[in-house]
Length: 99
Image (cartoon, rainbow, N blue to C red; front, side, top):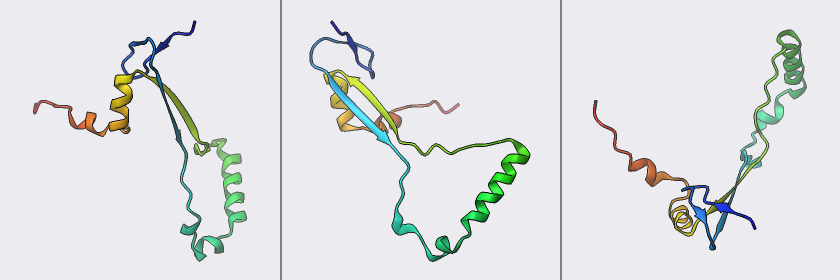
């Protein structure tokens, strides 16, 4: 038998379980392209990047792949998640002292 634990509160999930799937990917809007973007010499930019790579050996590729997350939630945490999926209210409730 499979055992599930709530990924939010850590409690064991006995029966009713919810799954939250989140996918985060870079946004690209083709309408944001300008004539200036199309006029750029991209081959020259690639050649410059390759020369820099050969001279420094540093190669950093920005993360542009979509990332997927999956969370098992108990009924209580599922309701909280639906009400505030980005956790904005939780951040507002933090009370720091004025030291």
